[in-house]
Length: 118
Image (cartoon, rainbow, N blue to C red):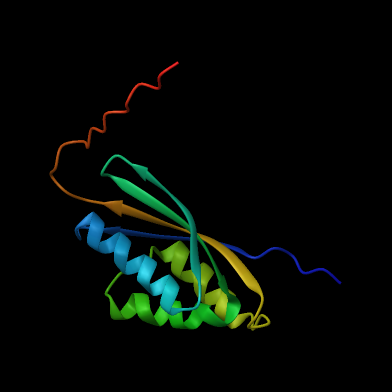
């Protein structure tokens, strides 16, 4: 019998330095036994990490984020807590995204994209 895909959408809003916060979340995912599949950066306002981790890593991830004082949004916290409480097979892979929204007074980050020859 196939199991339904488990996908979590996690999010936080922070005033923390974007590089520091992104590294902390990536390290927390790794410490929980997961890995980063990809990311998107939206100027310096938001970063989204896509990752996979075993269901057994959900509680350690929750704990690590709490240790870092990275508060999840209410919706994200409820989804993560429900997934932990569901008692999934600890080896089951969970796909997830983590949206970090940054509050700061910096101007928009401008990145020059080089022209592609040809």
